[in-house]
Image (cartoon, rainbow, N blue to C red; front, side, top):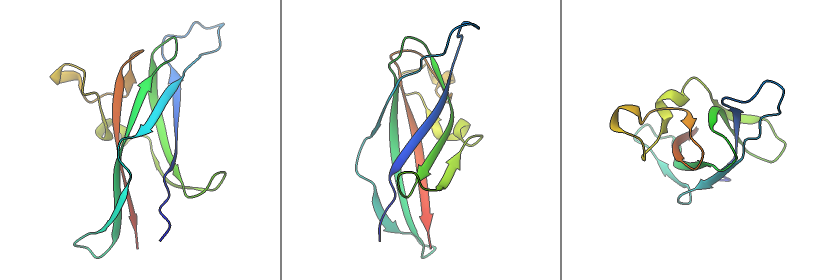
Length: 117
């Protein structure tokens, strides 16, 4: 089985000046190679973490994460509203760890779960 792992994170700049183009740069890495497993439901699952670091001149807010089976193909899964529960900032204070906002130079972890029949 071919496992899709091509991921694109769409972001918006936070606090950009109205006349300036937002410049958001992210470093996105998969911490460990995704490994498929068969769940108790008999379906094949792939779970992995994306480490996302804001490396541009400003802060970033993750608005959407999409997973594609092939470059230029159709998205097989997309997270937007669900990112509130899937994004974690390990370096933040305990009460502020679940947030889409990535301050410049900070890292967020996004949990991705794919299910195949």
